[in-house]
Amino acid sequence: MITVVAVVHLIVCVLLIALVLLQDPKSSGGGIFGGGGASSLLGATGAVTFLTRLTRYSAVIFGVTCLVLTLLSRSETGSVIDSGVPVTAPTAGAQAPATAPTDATAPQAAPATQEPAPAGKAPTEPKTK
Image 1: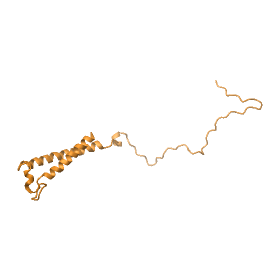
Image 2: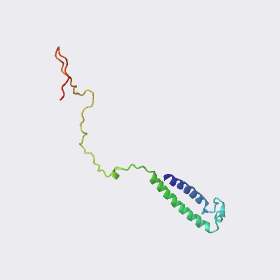
Image 3: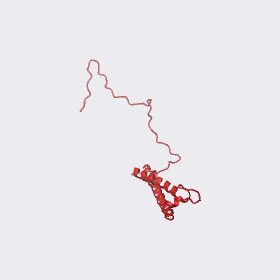
Image 4: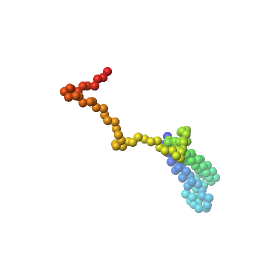
């Protein structure tokens, strides 16, 4: 979709540039075809209104395609306001919750070991029910 709109946008852009260059200048200087020759391109009186009208329509289409391209190319990230989640500000005296130490020097529980067997007896397996 964005490719189609971009191609239309480029075509309208080139058309708009050409239409502006084809119009009869307000001063007596030469246009793209020199002097008064530009007004005779499409007839003596019809060329000015036709080119002006076509320039106006192409400028409107150019503006619309600019807006459509902007809307299609934006990211869909959203904001906190759009999500509806209430935001609470931290209070002045609030502290982060305390956590347990995570370093290696913290005491750890010793693994359970079997009691040594008395001398002369074989070690026994733990009984399970």
